[in-house]
Image 1: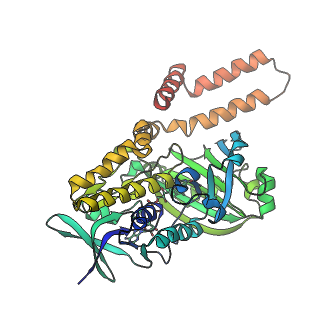
Image 2: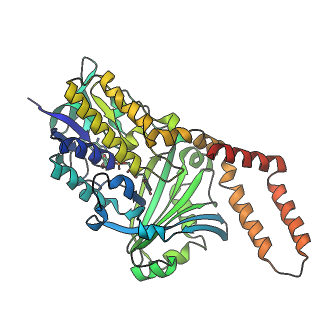
Image 3: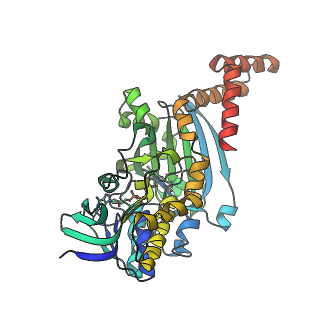
Amino acid sequence: MAEKFDSVVVGGGPAGIAAAYTMAKVGLSVLVLEKGEKPGAKNMFGGVIFRHHTEKMAPEFWKTAPVERHVVEYQYWFLSKDSHVLVSHRNQKFNGRYNAFTVHRAKFDPWFSKLAEDAGALIINRTTVDDVIKEDGRVIGVKTERGDVLANVVVAADGVNSMLSKQAGMREELPEDAAVLAVKEVIAVPKQKIEERFNLGPDEGAAALLVGCGPGMHAGFMYTNRDTISLGMGVNIRDLDKSKQRPNDLFEQFKKHPSITPLVRDGELKEYSAHLIPEGGYDYVANVYTHGMLVAGDAAMLVNAINWEGTNLAMTSGIIAGETIIEAKKKGDFSSRTLSQYRQRLEESFVLRDLKKYREIPKFFSSNPHFFTLYPDAINELAYMWHVVDGELKQDRIKQMKAKLFKQRSRVGLMRDAYHMWRLFS
Ligand SMILES: Cc1cc2nc3c(=O)[nH]c(=O)nc-3n(C[C@H](O)[C@H](O)[C@H](O)COP(=O)(O)OP(=O)(O)OC[C@H]3O[C@@H](n4cnc5c(N)ncnc54)[C@H](O)[C@@H]3O)c2cc1C
C-alpha cells in the first residue's frame, strides 16, 4: 500500500520549502519530492532573495545562509548601440537594514530546505513526480518513478512549467505573450575587481536592469555576487519568435555592448543556462485550488516582473498554502470549498494585490514595445546632443533635440505614453 502523508509537496524551490516548513513546524507529516539531486540543482536564477519574506522563516538568516552580497545599489540602464544612460539609486540605509541579497540558488536552496527538514519534513531528492492520482474527481496523491504516494493535500510547487497543475486540469500551457525566456551566464571575476568596477564595499552588491538594444519586450539583468557576476537577458517569447533571432545570439550581442564588456572583462565563464519566467501578471494566474490540491509560486504564475520579484511571492504563497492545509486538517475537510481559502488569502495578501494593481502593465508593454526600443535610443541620442560642445548656440541645440525627438515620436504619441505610464503606475 502507498504511504500516506498530510501533505506531499512537489518541488523543493522557495514555494515548496516554505509550504513544507510551515506545515512540518506544527507537526503535520510532510513529504517533499524534488527531481534535482538536491534542491536548487535544477534552478536557474540570477538575482536576489528578499530579507522581509525570508526572515519570516529564518530570523537573521544572512548570518548563516550562503548569501553572496547585500544589495546597496539599484541601477537602471538605457542602452543604445554604442552608449548608455544610467540612472542609479544607492542608499546607505541598505547597509543599515538589509533589503535583498544576491544568492546562487544551487547553494541557497539546500540551506533553505534544511529549515523544513529540521522542522520535521521528509525531503526526497532525485524523484520526479510523473502525475497526480485522482479518485472521484479529487486529487489524492502523486505518481513517481519510485511508486505512488498518497496525501490529504498535494502542493504543486513544481515551477513555471508545472506539469502537475496541467495534469490536474488547473492550468494550460504558458501562453507565448506571458512567457519570458531568460538566458544567463555566471562569469567569475575576482572579488576585488567586482568591487572596483561597481564601486562597492566588501559585502555590498549591485542589481541592474538594462533596457534597449534588443527586439520588442526585453530586458537585460546584472547582479554582483561575491566573486562572480550573473549577467543575463530575458525576451518575451512572442517577440523572440517575431525577431527570428536565437536567444543565444541576442545574448552575445548584449554581452559585447561597449558599456557591458568592461564590467566582465577577463572573466571566466562558469555556467550558462536558460529558463522561462511567467510574467503575464494577474490575468494569467492559474487556478490555484481544487479538491486535494493547491498550486504555489511560479507554478501558479505568481511573478511580479515590474518589481523584479518572484522568490518572495513563491515563499509567501507557500506559507499561505501550508497554513490553509493546517486549517483544513483541523476541520478534517480537504474539499475545494475549504481549500478555496487559499485563493481568498492570496487575494488579501500583497501577492495578488500587487499583481492586480499592475494587471494592465504586461499587456500594455507587450503591445507597446517602443518603450524598450525607441525610448532607450531617444534618451541616449538626446543625452549625446546635450553634452556635445562644438560652438553651436544652446537655443539651436535645444531646437534640434526637440526636432529629433518629435521625429521619432509625435507630440501626441509622447503625451499619450506619458499619460499611460502615469495611469498604470499610480
Ligand atoms: C533568470 C532569472 C532571474 C530571476 N531573478 C529573480 C530575482 O532577482 N528575484 C526574485 O525574487 N525572483 C527572480 N526570479 C524568479 C524566481 O526564480 C522564481 O519566481 C522562483 O524561483 C519561484 O520559486 P518556485 O519554488 O515557485 O519554483 P522553482 O524555484 O522553479 O522551483 C521548482 C522546483 O520544482 C522542481 N520540480 C519541477 N518539476 C518537478 C517534478 N515533476 N517532480 C519533482 N520536482 C520537480 C524543480 O527541480 C525545482 O527545484 C528569476 C528567475 C529567472 C529565471
